[in-house]
Amino acid sequence: MTTGKTRDEIAEAYSSEPWWYDLRGFFILTFAYNSTIGTQMRFFGPNFGPDHLEVACGTGTLLEMVLNWRRRRKLPPVKVTGIDYAPSMLAGAKRRFAGNPQVEVQHADAAQLPFADNRFDTANIANSIHCFPTVDGALRDILRVLKPGGTLAANVLLYPSGFAPLRWAAQKINDWGIRKGILYSPFHVEELRAKVLAAGYEVASEFTSGNTWNVVLRKPL
Image (spheres, rainbow, N blue to C red):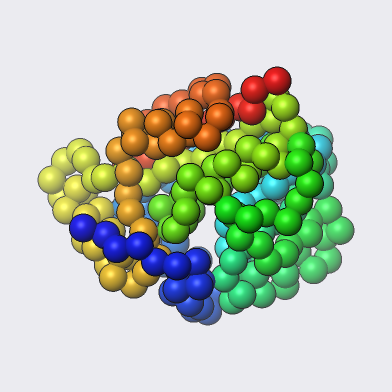
């Protein structure tokens, strides 16, 4: 059973050094999500329009890797706005992108975005929905700031499945994350599908790998 936490409690749970956050994130990705960096590059990398919103960007490590992935493939340059609610995470991202005029990082709540309606072409939520205290509110407000026809790519942490050793390891990490306050809850696919449809999105594409539901959502025209 999980207990709800406020956005400030979650921000406090993420008040670790950026290097520890990144190392911890690698193990969570590998053993809880049962995913890989390569899978994430190929999934999130194509979903960047000219004006892009990166939700819960953390220290910016994954965002920087995805942007480098795009650059190596000679994909069009983009303007990126990254947001996060945890000050320590934002501090790391601001240092990382200090010399990159195409990336702006700012403090914001995903459920109360400080942007105009129909502003962004695309948005990504990478490895973060599990820690949102208000998933429904975040989905609705991201929809609001997307342009009609704009897309949101997200990967969602599911309850552990698969072979017993991997399932056991994922459950242990999830239990620790809930105690620590960096995990609100994993999800079932149908539970999240109901939320995104209720928020007003269309499901453009989806696939499940490991303990992860990877989904691209579209704002109706």
